[in-house]
Length: 157
Ligand code: ADP
Image (cartoon, rainbow, N blue to C red; front, side, top):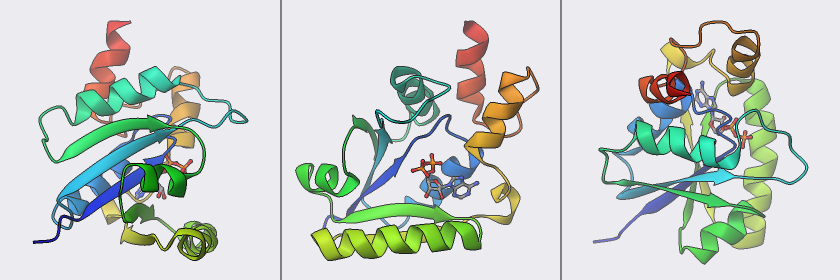
């Protein structure tokens, strides 16, 4: 039987319940999901690469079909390097669609790698990492927007 693996790339600054929803639903479609934490030298992050990775690791620590990796550079290059044929992305709204469409078509043209989109669940569609960062920066409560594992890690500090 075919072993279908997908990479779920993103900044995850930080991981939210929206990301968790997409990953959990994609578990029914793929044999393995590699959550790929990207670092782009031109981007400023609230949480550094290690923290972003640790939040995800703690969130999915009991799920054997999920692997977490860090990468820099082009997502398609990383996908090829680890021999993955699908990119997983979530769609929340028309703005996501327009943006993702251009990237997915370019990626397919350059590499043949298909992007698989899952539509956000109604209950998490409003959640974005940038809003979570804003609330957190101003010491607001993000506990209903992010995984419990992340809350535990940031409260430990
Ligand atoms: P990037 O900087 O690559 O967009 P993000 O961490 O912001 O990285 O997002 C990674 C993926 O998760 C994207 O496909 C994004 O559309 C999706 N995503 C983010 N928030 C949600 C949400 N609330 N519901 C569904 N998908 C989401």
